[in-house]
Image (cartoon, rainbow, N blue to C red; front, side):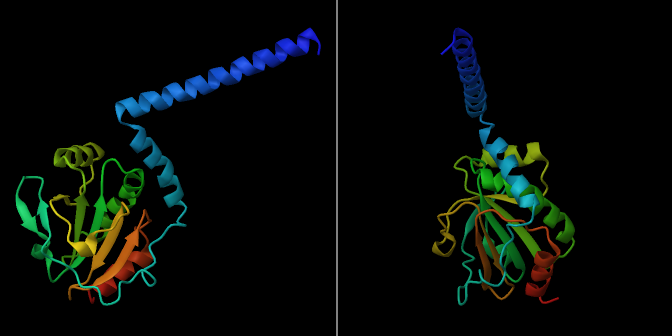
Length: 202
């Protein structure tokens, strides 16, 4: 091997190592600052934008499953309420956490869905945070300027004890769980809005 080729290979190797060190340092900085979750979430939101991940409102129906309204929640004001306060309405309940990238990814489209249906008094949103420290959820939502109602989960009844975060449930006014979707999804579609309307009996 000629000296020129040898030097070129060494130079190429050094450049590649430098690039990987740079990538590692960026990753370490993001992790140390706590922003790695949001960065990953933003990347995943691009996937949601394509529309290929939509909730299947037919296949995901939990036939025969009844909602459990005895679910304690904490409001932003620190008041303890129960899911039963929304009994008789269509409930869109999303279990999420600030440490969950897929949750972060789907939140903008949930906000758009909320904007589109918030004037419908028969539909309520329960964005239920699983963070151990409720203030983290409040701070995150305020910083992102989301306006949907956010609560902190005090205890989860067995029927909502999904091992996947996020998980979204739609509960009918009659108390049936008519949809469970595990994982992130795109909800701000006409099809899903029509589904909420049909569940509400309108």
